[in-house]
Image (cartoon, rainbow, N blue to C red; front, side):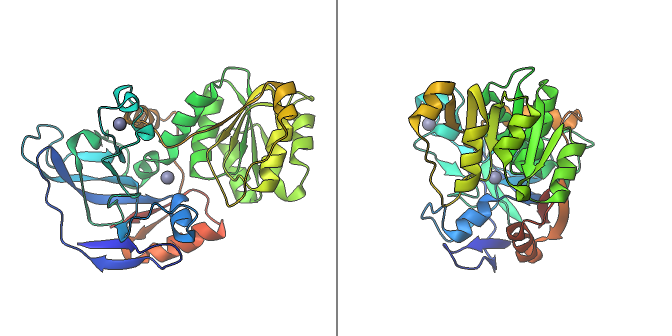
Length: 338
Ligand SMILES: [Zn+2]
Ligand SMILES: [Zn+2]
């Protein structure tokens, strides 16, 4: 089978031929029909995220059809259309037992991170990791649910976003499109910040009440103006450069929650007094749970959340997708069709 392989930081991805995996007991083989390219791929390529495993097939937003089932599998069945949950926890630790597999310290697999993922014709996963997709949801539109929408569902839960809150989404990409729609549905007022006019337009179309062009600077001052001095109750930080983190810290409301989803080479520095006098919380949000994937599929199937796809490319044109993502010119995901 053809697969896009990662060989380590600062090395190009390569399309290679690999043997087709064989599903073992409890496993299924999925014929991949759509796989989204996430910003995380860029972090692997730059070396900012280096889990030390390569060669490796990237891709953690995976949709496909069950090609083959291994011994003992009763569900899903061959031919079912599924989306893959990309964590396989140990199943025994405290985090796994409460469903927080994303926090498991002894992961058995993590597709597209430390285990072969979806930029390939086939991927092998435990049957439990396949969530059935309803009719009426195209494969390429479903792919961005896998990380984009699920990560937004997870972050919103951690942020304890409540009706009437003001939510700032700093940086507009696939996760942000989910965050904006979820926040609007929760009854929050959304402010979106980006340097790209097309992304701000899309944020507005999805419900953002206020837009701030980061190129104009003074983001925190603009937030204070918009909110009548209150600041924002929840801030989703998806860029996390020195400049954006400083703006977020200045924009936070009393008892506000600053949630890091994105990261860069830069470190976060804050004087404790800024947190003391505001009673603000700073937290991180990583990945998502299987339950959140099921919820995210329901949200998209019901039309409550829409995924945003910029373009669909055949697998062998993966580099075009990576380059467009790196340039920041995409309005939504690039989805590969192996
Ligand atoms: Zn991702
Ligand atoms: Zn565990």
